[in-house]
Amino acid sequence: MSEPTRTCVGCGRKAPQRELVRFAAPAGVLEADGGRRLPGRGAYSCRRLSCFERAASRRAFARTLRRTVTIPSGLKASIQED
Image (cartoon, rainbow, N blue to C red):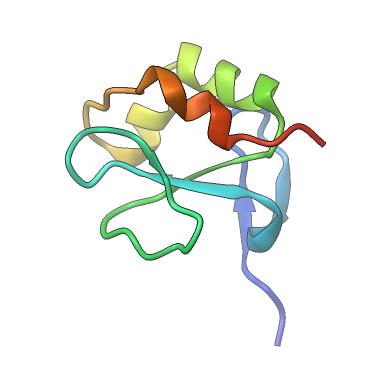
């Protein structure tokens, strides 16, 4: 079986789902979803901090998740630089 492909909301690069970080906002607060278990829509970002920051500044998370989201200041720490 082939692995699902997802698109980074920061840079637009398509990659296998396991290479990207999933984010969800079930209560309106953006959370990293490492186990891919949080309910609702998900937004994917590369593991580069620059992609996360670009998505946040362009409001790409809110647009993809189709809701208003709050991004906590400590969330950047969950992104690992390659």
